[in-house]
Length: 487
Image (tube, rainbow, N blue to C red; front, side, top):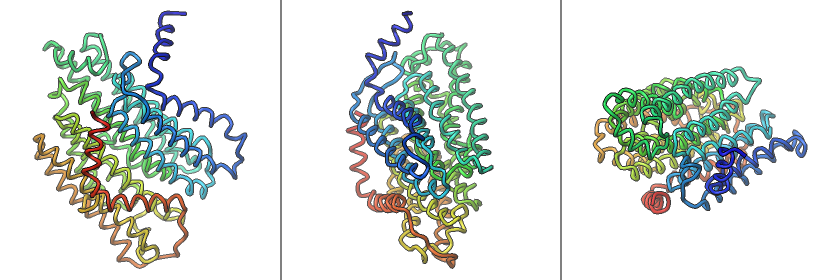
């Protein structure tokens, strides 16, 4: 046995406990693919959804049991930040599975591959949340993204779905090339010694003046590659088309789980790895955050498609969350982003559950499809109004608390202008969200109401209650996050 193989075997024996949730997901997803068509015929394929939910519950339990530590030659780190964002990714994935049942049944597209791809992608996200080396960051992103490319194009009989998947794949491959080239420049600037984030934080700050351009170029390329993964402006061009063409549950999935993992990587890479050269990336990231808030909200005003509106809204919310990445206080910034992402997952999943309900009637794609929902389904319309107003940050809903804490932190760190932009663009978001409310309550209904699926009703009900009462528990949740996840 070669020295490399022996070293790899020793690392696996020593550090496997750190990645037990990921290994569990990959093994189970692989096993799902092999017997999928042997044990369940097409009429019973819906049984994979509850099985997947059980798998996700076991994964969440394993995440809570993994001890803190660092392993695999310091390429993966299990700590509070990792654990917190891993649980967010699992929560968003569970919501996606619940949203998928009724829609895939109506389209007769229930397959085991669909759920296996979600699990494989989730395993990449869990790796990304704890990646502490630029190499592990890159490979985690690719494992996460490749599965999502396929899921976007899952409805093969629809030209829009295939086109969206192809666009996302091509632009994603291009951004990955930029990312890996930036990593190579950083590696060269560090003297070809390491790509570990903790080591880079010290080495890059000590690089000679002649290497400053190399460091700046590498950091900027890494920033571009990672900004693409969260659909931040001006690297957002794939987002509206991919959101519109993908199956709606996958649209909800892309808007939440991958963003949570990518933001964890942002906090780790720029908060720990590039902190010593913050002058190279703070200003570009500031412009990216501001542009995301402005373009995301302004472009959403003119949208007629509900999914495109939520896509541009998602871009704007990424701009808000980047305020936490810009924070000079890593712990407070991570807490603020985590809390905001948790709230966003609840609000966004609830809103998409309503969209999927309308799609069961052949509607939901356009904003005008919400016409008269307040008369046909008053409870459902009320829940949708709550989600939209919370996304806009209207008090006393929980979305207001998330924005308040994030904006307060940004002001304390000196980002006053950026916070003013965030406040003004939040007012713009209230305009287009209220446009949907107007369709629901001030327009005459068309057609008849149809029963709502149990899974969708569960998501809408739970999410609505959490949004309504969440503000009361916000300070406690924030304190709990600080004690459990980041100490």
